[in-house]
Image 1 (cartoon, helix red, strand yellow):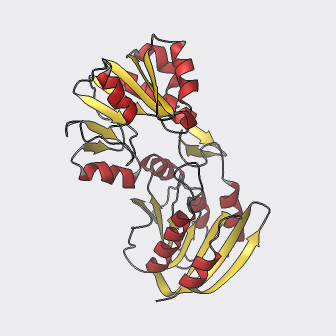
Image 2 (cartoon, rainbow, N blue to C red; image 1 turned 180 degrees about the vertical axis):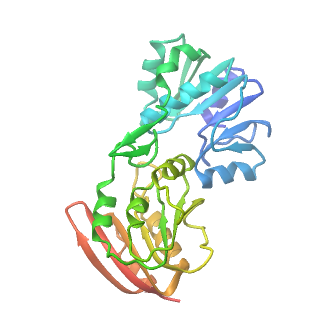
Image 3 (cartoon, rainbow, N blue to C red; image 1 turned 90 degrees about the vertical axis):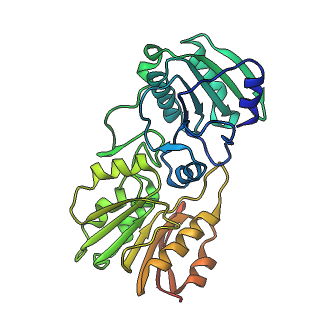
Length: 321
């Protein structure tokens, strides 16, 4: 458990089964909780991490519970949605555990306006507090049944939930008319790029590979075409059923607040391993991210196709074997 949760339990907090934990990450130590604890985690790598530990892991909450623990995400709309879901499922105590950088102080202030709060306890640059579940108090925090942005269905917490990412728009505008018969969108998100890729001449199969189950569910609504195949998977480890002609991607570059170029580099390696000998990669990245060396090491031909003051689009071909 987190040091805050351990301290809270030592200070009088008690949680009982059936218990649901919303949104833990691999940095969250749940080893002291029983295996029957339900873990709600839509991100495939994190989902698999807790499944390997023996927990009952689901991408979406299932069933009622006695108590619930919410590990606070960065996105405010998602945090509120998780609080509402926890209150809907639980009849007992709701525990909120979060870092200051994830908005725990602001959320605590908002929750105190609605219910009586116990704690809070401050430790390790964050806070933990708890309150008695009250579904009616947070009914207005429920995520909208259909959230749309620029005509596409999105959801709280997914990448670019409020509209089309400008980097993706730049990439789509740079693509040629023909991409080949077998194409993949690695890190497809809620499907903006894929919706455009389906207009490509001669395309027969389009693989949408996305680690976020919530985003992929949105993509299923946004990309309604028999040529589309949906994969809830980590793009870094996903293996295409057959070699691809083209990979298109706008890879993530952070899991925390700091840029992590290694993430994008892993996507480049994943694209190369799934392409044919003459396959091509089209990718967009923030201008400051250093992907040029990795692309040159991984592909025979690399060129910057287009760019602006925020993004750069690369076209690479013929992966080195």
